[in-house]
Length: 274
Image (cartoon, rainbow, N blue to C red; front, side, top):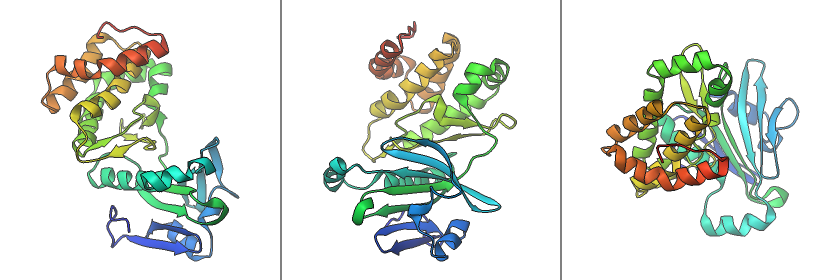
């Protein structure tokens, strides 16, 4: 049984070949009670955003007033034995981590449900559902295509708030794992933001600070390099993170340098910081 959500809000779901859970006071829970099956979420009225061999994402209209974001994780037959060896499905992993972050006031979309098929042709297929984030733009798109707005973000406390929340994520023993600027959504009017796409996230109480910073901050910084953000601003990002986590700036640079250099080579970029 999953314990990441408040059990007063959460209903365990089990029907035929699927198990999971759903927030009780959600339109999706009512939808399920009408004999609808999770496997049909990304059919019918779903607006598909992206699909490939392993995943499919879309916006699903549950009621006329309610849409949810749904991600399907397809477990390919050749990898099913690895799931048996290494543990829980991606859908459950994302659910647990998203709830842990949400309950600790880290800005992520509110989780709504997860489902895992454990028998039959869909064995291993999982679904993760959360609230939709509307009127948002990827930070990467702002940096590339709206320089005036990006400059306003730099002048505000926006990046301080982002780095503070990354630090909270790390203090919780979590690595986002794919902290690209495409995975930070921004409300252009309020400068509120949310971390999305937790597929590569991991959570473990014994993850070292070096590993967390190396995995996440290096990618965050290289995205800043890609947008031609100045060295002085990038050093401010590093200063914020290092101060919060009791690291010297030189120590933080040393930690993230190996992965940062690999990313720079891959993207054919240079940065005097490394």
